[in-house]
Image: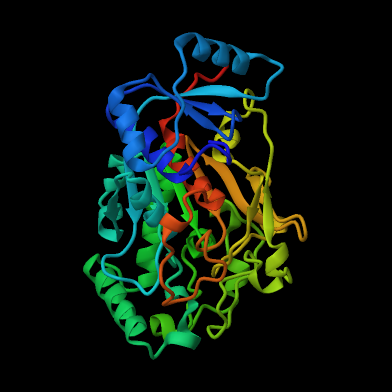
Length: 394
């Protein structure tokens, strides 16, 4: 999985997932040649790699033993992690064609990793319990319809989406979309606490935490929910209820395309030519989880923007790990945390291979980016739940 000898990093994850579906043994060799995968040879596996365009090497049993012995050495910052089962994947996304695409569903399809699409009804009916891993599609959990009001309030898709959201909330027994979305966010939080793995990108990250923090507080202006926002609502925000962020200030103006001070988009002042973020280096033996999530063929990843591009480092909770940051302004791009028995990862930006993706832009063709390090970070999170769970020391 290094840069020089792997032709299709993204589809290689799909091959590993395919092996897990067939109850085959896969070992993830952390920090070895870009985070390579090791599996017993078979002609079927060889044929599958060839069909998918994935580069591979055949080594002898003795060479494999020597390799694993080297990796296990205390002097090497490497580790072999056994992947046990193919995680069941759910994508939280509305039905129909939204005027934007989603990086996670695109890379899942490209890597040929199966997933199920679920939405509010399924979440509220506790169907999350059927899945090991959940992705939150581009979503606004605050009931403000993506803060698209200024630019798109007259657009047919905006009017239609607002009407559909209100109808769904009503059908599910809620008088406001914001209250229904809060209930969904709380169910997802419970899913994580119970042992689930949750991954979110772009506006699904900060809007999720904002919704949780505004439990019982009306932060929506009249154009969103038909009545005025609650007076002094900023002082009623409860940061103890959030997953990742704290001490943020909400954006009150409905004409501003922003939720809060969590996002760094308007304060970046970083030219595209210098917009990169650096992945942190961890001990593979002592910190296998962040090491897994940062596996790549480069430590420097080109930046990309979104409604929520990056996270204010001063508003990230102290128990949340910053795994990738831009060194020019110290903004966090890629963060990870533990909640209860489960885990969550937030990834800033919209599309790792489209620097400034706008509403209505054509989707990225991943056939042109099979070595994308930005997309690899998504796939690391997808395989992470497959890793063998080691017993904790007591």
